[in-house]
Image (tube, rainbow, N blue to C red):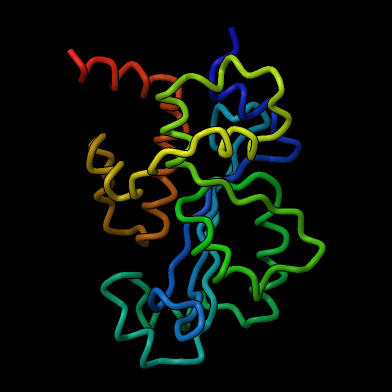
Length: 207
């Protein structure tokens, strides 16, 4: 029997990636994208093939310092690793393409869009939504699923926030050397790796 994770891989027409961003705030209009962390999975989605973080040089030192406690990018790190907008855009186009799993995809897309080419075929999927779909197990019986987005459309329940999911399943990473966006990527990978055991965990909680 096909597992839920295998179903997602089967319905994917491009490589699967996990993505998290770092921004100076929550408004795509007033704030800036600072970094993108991406984990690329092997073809069968079973292991991590690579992980990479791109840091963009911000035009606002004030915004950088004001929000440093959230994104963890210091002025020094920005000076060493920060890319120009041109290089950042080029690197992002090569790194972010295909089936991308994240949280709050509308938020991520709003910050990513200015740096993504018009011909870039990227599908941002809401991993917390797919976690809830995995708990339901109902999509496993659907024969007409052609793409991952078809699974998302079939689950119309309220989706918990990513932080809440991490708290619920005690998914933490205490490595001080990692940026918060890199930690989020590792947490996304945990949920990806456990998509087929999460329903069992939920069932146990009911008894």
